[in-house]
Length: 306
Image (cartoon, rainbow, N blue to C red; front, side, top):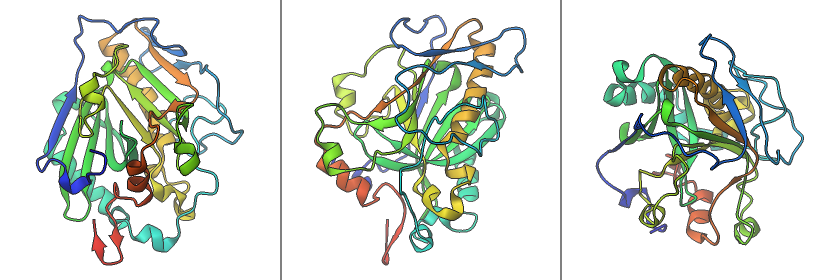
């Protein structure tokens, strides 16, 4: 279960595509929040976004580095207060080696990127995915005109180990805000690692995952995906590097989803909720150890590389 590490997972690449049955519409009235209005008259128009919900807890500036800012508003996601990565700590990440990220994107796209299916590339990022068992892993994210390509790439032996494609037109809800644990969880008392923001992208059409999906730590069909900043953003030299910043990815995603809806689901709306994102973990000692030891990142650990 959770105690198992990456090395005990599947040996072959797990490829998952998420597509939409265009004859079925997402359930309405399932999620509260704001809606992203899609204009049919002008596909290049800036999407009209209103954020609602309980709001965020801290008054801090929003993303000032986004290249495709939708609207100048208050903060959407945030960095963990007091977070810091020294130069020595940053150098231990194999993804931080010269040209490592660029090479990873090239290697990954050679395997699974399809121009006729995905369209032109919008951008690429190195972010942290938080899975349904509360485990953090670094992922290479490539956003295209039609898809989000999510790669698990081994930066040590330079091999792709996992892949997931999410078509943009299947996304029905996006949540953005600070992470939190459930009310009766003991996790806030033993870990402060969730004191930062992120985004949750949902394509479940209002349906909850099955019992089997929830309790399978390697399930690749959970109908949502959650991202946060990569730890390297806490290196003072990288605070404004868009590659590690989930804010920049989110701003680009809003634009791409807007255009995908115009093409595939004209007249429909995607829900955008600003407020706390709940991590459904109650007393997971194994995930705390997994995350605090950085097992989900490829690093040089004093001569041991994993």
